Length: 170
Image (cartoon, rainbow, N blue to C red; front, side):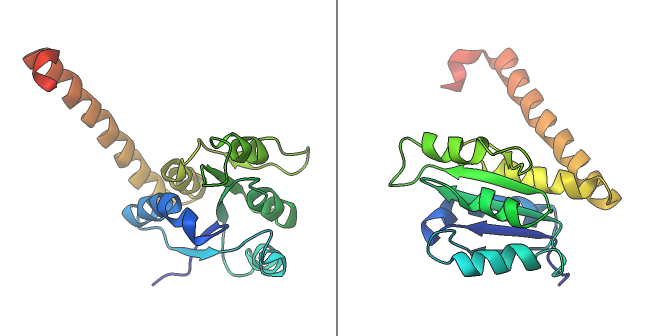
């Protein structure tokens, strides 16, 4: 198996249900990744080591998911010059997810974190692939096919509605 080019990290195991979607998307596109737990609050030394060695280990993008106060993506971004994609997660200690969204979205100047929607790990996986696809033609081609398939699914849906009428879709 190839060396991972994307790191998928999360603050705790409870985030795996959401972050799994990023891994599934990268698997579908055949992009090698690593997945692990790195808590900004409970394992700060591990977090620092992960971020500061990421480039040397071959990573090109980091997808970081966290709930609650959601410091992980921003702290990782403060320690590396790699692109970081933050996934706010609606967790059990969350304020409807808004605390996570705002914690990841409102970064200070100089420490950007690309932020996807609440529980939007699938989009984070796609965005990581798009970043890699700027220099990898094979990944770009796979993404082009993915987008064509999205369009085809929508076309099939509206054709079904137009053919059968909306009453038959319930």
